[in-house]
Amino acid sequence: MFMRMLLRQAYYILQEVGRSLKHNSLLNFAAVGTTAISLLVLGVGLLLVINTNQIARTVESNIEIMVFLKEDVSQKEAMAMEPLLKSVSGVKEAEFIPREEGLASLEGWMGQGTDIRDTLGDKNPLPDAYKIKTRDPQEVDAAAAKIGRLPGVEKVRYEQEVVNKLFKLNNWVRIIGLTVIVLLGICAVFLIATTTRLTLFARRREISIMKYVGATDWFVRWPFLLEGIILGCVGALLAVGILYFSYGMLTAKLQETIPFLPLVSGGGQLLLIFEGLLAGGVVLGAIGSTISVRKYLSV
Amino acid sequence: MISFFNVSKIYPNGVRALQEVSLQIDKGEFVFIVGPSGAGKSTIVKLIFREELPTKGQIYIGGRSVIRMKSGEVPALRRRIGMVFQDFRLLPDRTVFENVAFAMKVICAGRSEITERVPQVLKLVGLGKRMDDYPPQLSGGEQQRAAIARALVNSPSIMIADEPTGNLDIDTSWEIMDCFQEISKRGTTVIIATHAKEIVDAMRQRVVALNCGEIVRDEHRGVYANAT
Image 1 (spheres, chains in turn cyan, red):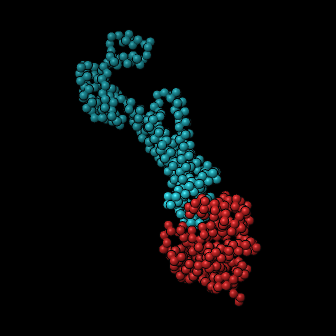
Image 2 (cartoon, each protein chain N blue to C red):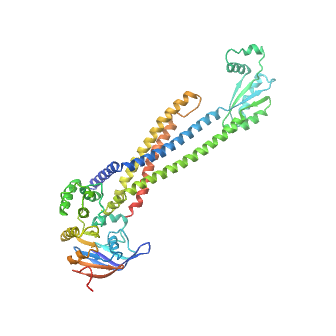
């Protein structure tokens, strides 16, 4: 008996949802539109942040310290320095580059047609060197200074300016990006709350009549809640769809023109954003309708 | 059936709507509540319906205190009371049938019950042929009869109307009153707040007269105002 009542109630509630979706098409369109636009803007913000993060991380991890050894250090002695270099705090890798290899890579870098060995004769002007990578780009400065004071080291070279600037820039991108995302999130909540309030204002009469004929609060609330969830979900799907296709096209174009740009494409991070937006749409729709309906329930 | 004990109501804006009102309405009675606007008629209706709570005093309906009732129990109370308003309060985008069926769906009645009971009630109020029309297509009197059908469909033991003829002409008002009388004959308690003097005078039912929030007269087979 109780079960049958419950099923009946569910059926009537679904009927109300269907009816309202069909009859309030303009307001529903507005609700879906606001949700879609809010989430779209939020999604664009998120994509920008994860991409700048990715680019910054790639550039940062490529920062190396070149350590040139003194002329009078023999190759054997030079190779023996590896543990010492690795013991410097912050150093992750130390790759020995003998002078022959340095010359070869210089040759390769200058390209064919230049006969560098002929010009130089038998003499190799390059010193033995080490290529150092640090664990954290922030440690480059300190590590380079320490290595420079080691015996046998002639010169230390790294893109100090680049490192510092990039580091600052990246920090700012993160701070601004996060602020923008938080602000956009708040805007989205307000926009959606306003739209649901509008919807409910248009239907306050219906709610009061429901209450007058003895509907329980939940009987009134359920249709609005379900509707909110459905509209939020549709809005989010729209936003995700637009983001997915336009981002895919944009990254494809960008990879063509700037192939070395390390953009985020496919995989976990994107999926996470899209799932997050979908969940966000559902939650926003549910919360928006529940909060707004409360005001009209006190009849 | 309905008892008011020293009920006072002061609205948050300071208006003293009722002062020390005591009133007893028995099962099956037909009661007019009359008085000038602002006398407190609507407040009495709202208190019975528990749309408002009194500032002071006690109200019992069917032996239960309305004041001590939890908000979760209010729907059950309202299902035993049929409510009719001056402005009908029908849903304009639903047919007459759907408007009445709505009240049954709210209490989770079965579909076969609905298809049986709704036409029955609509026939009773004389709308048997207009079930599939929308409220805006009906005249004022027909709309009010649809609203009465909605109030009646769950067989309430109390029927309350707040100025049910306020928007209707005198002939139509009589039709509506006939409806209420018919309902009353079936044993339902009927309470009507009104200032339709002619009707009250002609029907000679119990009249509770209010003025400035106080009961100034309560007589059986009464009239709207004493000849003075």
